[in-house]
Length: 188
Image (cartoon, rainbow, N blue to C red; front, side, top):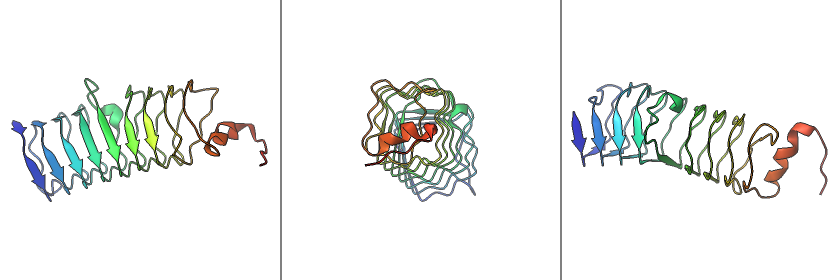
C-alpha cells in the first residue's frame, strides 16, 4: 500500500495499527505508536511531531529524510532498520535507552534531545551535531566522532583513546569529560 501527502492527527496505532506499506510526504501529529510493529514499513520525507514511538519494533524499517520533533522514543533499536538511504533528525525528543549500534549516520542533527544511556558504539557520526543534548550514560565505544559538535551538550563521557575525535568541537567545562577516565583532579 502506498500513501502520499496525508496527515494523521491524534491516531492511536497501538489499538488500531497503521496499515503496512510505504508513506511519502506524510505527517504524523500526536500519534501513538507505542509498542507497535513498524517492521518493513517505508517512510520517506515524513515528519513525526509529538508522537510516542516508545518500544516500537523497527526491523528493516526505512527512515529516509525523516524529522522527529517532540517525540518520545524510548528503547528504539535503530540498528535493526533498513540502512539504505537512512536519514533523520531529532529535535525536542526523548531518545533514552535507544541504540544506534554500528550505524553510519553522518551529519545527523540532535537538538534539545535527551539521549540518556543511548548506545552509539561502533557508530559513524562524522559531522553530526549534538545541540543542547543530555548525553548522561550514553555509550561511545569505537565511535567515529570526527567533526562532531558537542559544544552545547552536557553529561557526555568520551574516551579519546577508543574513539576517533579528530576535529570534534567541545566547550569548557564539558571538554574535561574527555579526561574523566584518568581519575585526575582539575582545579580552576
